[in-house]
Length: 71
Image (cartoon, rainbow, N blue to C red; front, side, top):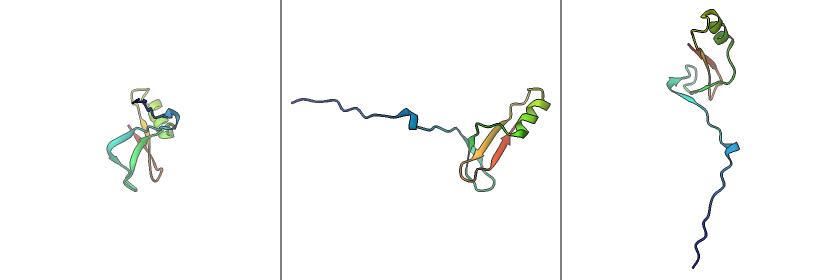
């Protein structure tokens, strides 16, 4: 009797992990907010006017794609 080990293959390039904000929902559709890669214009202006003291974050709704800026 032989026991051969069977190992599954996992393609790490296909796995997408997105950071969601727990407790904050989209006001338009109620979807989850996901951290956005692109910076909003308002976030850039807030960082410039606050001389770097504020760290605004840009988020986007999963379902309706509406963009939010959290200061």
